[in-house]
Amino acid sequence: MTRPIILDLTPDAQGMAALFAAVQVPDHVRPVLVLFSGGASRVEGAIRQARDLLHQYGMTDVGVHAGCPGALVPAGVPGPAPQGEDGLGAQHLVQAIRACPPDSVTICCSGPLTTLALALIQAPDIRTHLHGVIVSGGALLSPGDATTVAERNMAADPEAAATVLAMGVPVTLIPLDCTARLNADAVWMEQLAPMGAMPASVAGRVHALLAAARTGGARGSGVDISLRASAPLLALLSPGIFSGHLAHVDVECHGTFTRGMTVARHLGHAGVQPNALVLERMSVEAGRGVLRELLLAGSDGGMGGSA
Image (cartoon, rainbow, N blue to C red; front, side, top):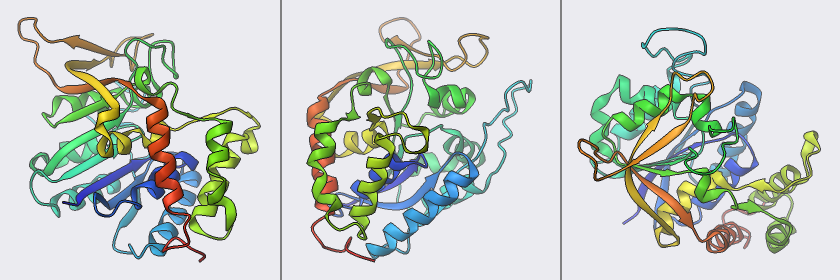
């Protein structure tokens, strides 16, 4: 069975690599919608690149759109009513989910959960169509990467994350604890060299994006880049390389110094019910191996060949 998936990606090289990997296994998953959330200029560029990639693979029916550009509740604005700066991304998401059969579609999120949260608020009925939501986000025992205690996707929109976790949808959470070492190092990039053999191909362009990001691009950081954007896809395709447990996950929305912090309460205490499967460990080498093979599968001169 080919599972329909929706990719809610970051508008960067890692997000593009996740999309490229996802189209290599049509017998297992097939994207039905791609969303990018972030700064307008980066999102516009990512949308163009994604549409070109999907066109090369004959998947012109797959919608590619911008997600919500801002948080449900803008920082510093009191009151519980979620606003959202732009509901169009959520509308596209609702339409794509409703077009899928009940209990069929999996959403892979590698950025903030704003668009999904707004979609669930606007159309609670879409919950019956979801087979699962796999989220790259949160930090439980490891330090955060936005603040000492908060991971950036949760910190960007804590209210959205709390909303999704409270909606009763099947959530799999992949925190920093699990993916901290899932990076593109020099050895892994060298193994991807065949992707760059044809620079004009889709594979060649994705390889160039990864190489530029790793060497720092305009920022000049020169450090290995995280591959967390592909973690939800890896968890869907290769669940055996992960281990985890059911827990009740809360997201701090009010703390001055702890906003965006994720806390997992283990089951067994009175009244504590699970709302997520938390993946606490993964075989990093196995994960990088799976992703490497998926990316190299697109560099064989097939449908992803020269434009």
